Amino acid sequence: MPARGLRRQCGHVALALLALVGCGPVLDEVVERGGPAPLVVDAPIAWPAEGARLTPPPVVVPEVLRGVVVAVDAGHGAPGNTGARSARCEDEQDLVLPIAEQVADVLDAGGLTVLRLRPPGERPTYDARLRALADSAAVLMVSVHADVRLPASAWSPTPGCEALVSHGQPGFSTLWSDEDPTLAPGRRALADALAARLRQTGLPAYDGQDYTGIYEQTGPGVFVDRHRPARRVRFLRRPAVPSAIVEVAHLLDPDASLRIREPAVKAALAHAIAGGIVDALMEDRAVLPTDGAAPAGRR
Image 1 (cartoon, rainbow, N blue to C red):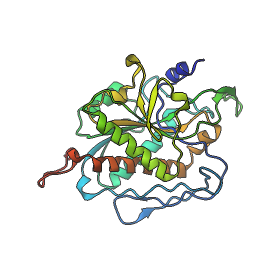
Image 2 (cartoon, rainbow, N blue to C red):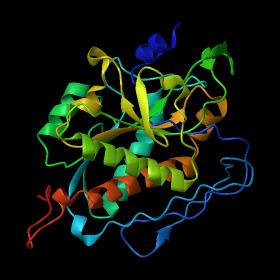
Image 3 (cartoon, rainbow, N blue to C red):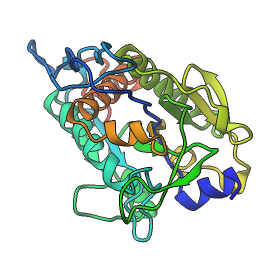
Image 4 (cartoon, helix red, strand yellow):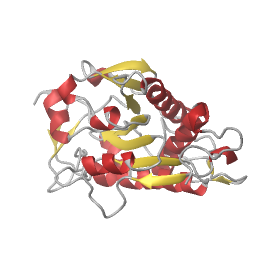
């Protein structure tokens, strides 16, 4: 099946992660949830190679952002839309939900107000999520996904699991749209901030090999939507606030599809994404208070 056909069949998959190899030391150092003490997450993991560590920079929410509303979406999970299927026969919707929830939890703990567009146990349509976003005071939106990249071949890792597998093409990606010239600078700044945090964490940036003709690279791991108009990604182009998608993992990579389930990896991804959101907010002067007024989005 042609690459574009597979991507459409799987639904858009966003947040490309890793080709984690082997089992090594620990995920080190990690997150300040708005307070002085970092949250340290230890677990066996090797990234990007044996003896390496995932080290997300601390996430500290400045007082000036307390109460600002942001939206976090867990990709897919709508009726009839489970997203991509991993090399281990797991659905994208189930793999990204706990990561998105951890992003929301970190931001909540730091004093931001988080609108969860796909809460656990619910299956809202994409249109319902966009309406909820439009009706809220959220000043930006990030949607967490996981990617599939071709070429791929058939394999069966366990009895009863018939899947596709694709080795190589590791790395995360962040996606944005320049379709609206008013929103484009904020969208790009958000995608750039997310990618910067993911790189600082120790994750490699995807080189875009399988994105030819559908995304154009604008920075390390950062890509702007170049689908033809009828195929452009609604979560990138329709929100009236800056929005971005994070592709956390290449789900057809057999190692990545295992590692994305590890608590340490999920924590590292969540903290990096939360940190990128905070960084983007601090760069956007429009959400900061002026003359003693409350920040935009504060209820």
